[in-house]
Image 1: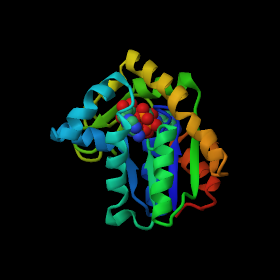
Image 2 (image 1 turned 30 degrees about the vertical axis):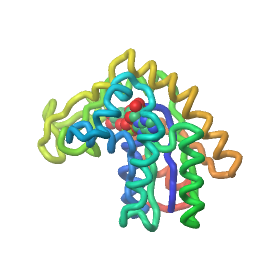
Image 3 (image 1 turned 135 degrees about the vertical axis):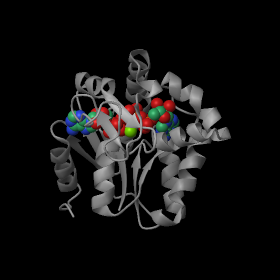
Image 4 (image 1 turned 180 degrees about the vertical axis):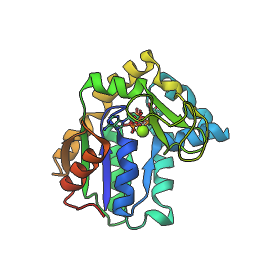
Length: 218
Ligand code: AP5
Ligand code: MG
């Protein structure tokens, strides 16, 4: 399956993607995670992306589209992928469509995670991420690690993302409404959008998502 996950910052895209990708046996491709890996490795691409990310603005398309395309062309993605955070504006959605058309492929669904703004703000404010693996995501009250500041999965140090400050989060939400939400209408016109509530326990949201994709949990 080829799925796009869309939803505001802090909706739980990364959290759900980890479970959905496992259930569906497809790789989880997060452009945010790819940028953060490039920043921590000090690559040229990471240097280009950092200032935009720290401000909560979108990294320019000419950097983002090539990076996403390279990742989607890797061997593990030939039979499908779950995109988290890409596309994030209509021109990225058009670039994805033309890339898929060129390879005689198509998207199966766009899963839209709906969460009220006050809840995403709480989720982002308490989020802590592992330095070793950005898939290890915690929350100080919703999913507290056994030892404060230490990853349950690998013992790595937990940190707060630099773009999770109040001002930056406000800008990320604005950017989401003005630049990313229009892709929902773009994909509605293709009949691809399934919207679910992302409120409630993580496992309940996963179950809801699998149901919406017409799959029982594997
Ligand atoms: P990105 O990394 O994609 O960030 P985002 O879209 O702002 O989304 P988040 O990662 O903040 O939230 P999430 O929905 O993954 O939530 P999570 O699962 O962690 O992008 C960052 C930046 O990179 C962008 O601002 C931009 O600069 C750049 N960028 C990336 N892609 C780009 C693109 N295509 N084009 C241009 N620029 C791009 O959950 C949040 C918290 O809530 C966690 O603590 C979690 O434990 C908790 N939680 C999750 N689910 C639940 C639940 N059901 N109940 C209670 N708590 C929950
Ligand atoms: Mg994420």
